[in-house]
Length: 115
Image (cartoon, rainbow, N blue to C red; front, side, top):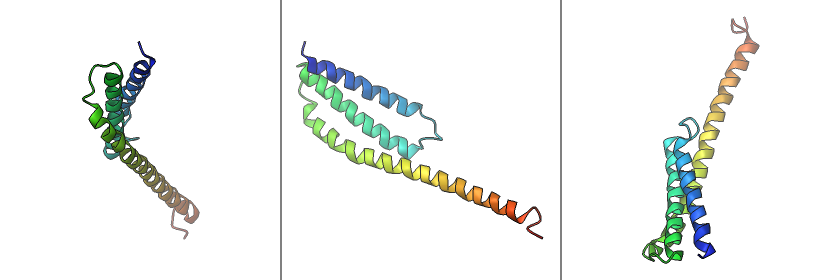
């Protein structure tokens, strides 16, 4: 057996595992939009892996015509995932910072508002 289908099978299993673990991550870490972008990215490379396995194992060449489109789709969806994840983290940090500033203001002013 050729070594190329074996490496393609390993990468396909890796992307399938990544897709599985994408849905196992809690809602507090990944919201629906972020999870959607990541899962589309993982699905596209899962399709690429399956297509490569079928091609190099000489089963069929049918998915090859769509493989290039799946590779192209991966990049914008992954970039949107990174942006969405970073934006969510930034929102959480700014909310925590505002809460901390409010707490510090109350501590400095005292319980009676500084009177």
